[in-house]
Length: 147
Ligand code: HEC
Image (cartoon, rainbow, N blue to C red; front, side, top):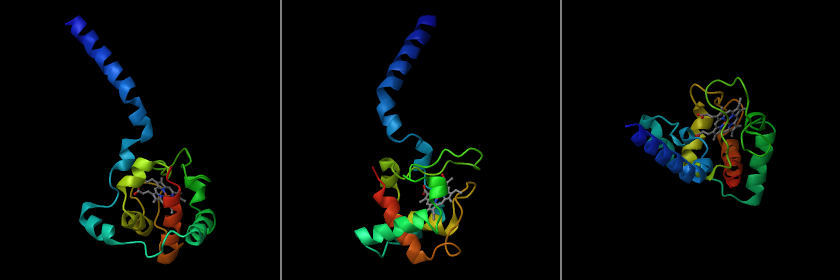
């Protein structure tokens, strides 16, 4: 029985080391879980960004991200998300995470900017801080941060 446990541990350890590169790719599998409630998902995913990702539009989004939108205070200068102590719930999203970028539709991100992410420091920004058009520009910048 003892040796079976030892063998089990060894297999577990080997599996962990083997899987490690995949784990570090998407550091926290929690971030891949949908944030939009099931009942609103179909509607949110149908919203499309009306602005094309031209250099001018991305630059406009960047200025809002670092300026009036103050996204930079939590998501950081490079968009990787600051490790801020004391935030309720989750840490600010790392926008360079390609696994996270791949699972989210643009409409889901706009939904977050309208409603916030419940139980976290991510508050609603539309309409008090950003207009919907401004938010779409910020999201073009967020998309451009993908590594
Ligand atoms: C006070 C800190 C704070 C500010 C300011 C902030 N965020 Fe966030 N943001 C967060 C946190 C914390 C999360 C993680 C929420 C979660 O895991 O559900 C998050 C998550 C997100 C997400 C990911 C939601 C998802 O579906 O995974 C997006 C997109 C986002 N923020 C965009 C923005 C934009 C754009 C701005 C500026 C207009 C902004 N945030 C400003 C803290 C902040």
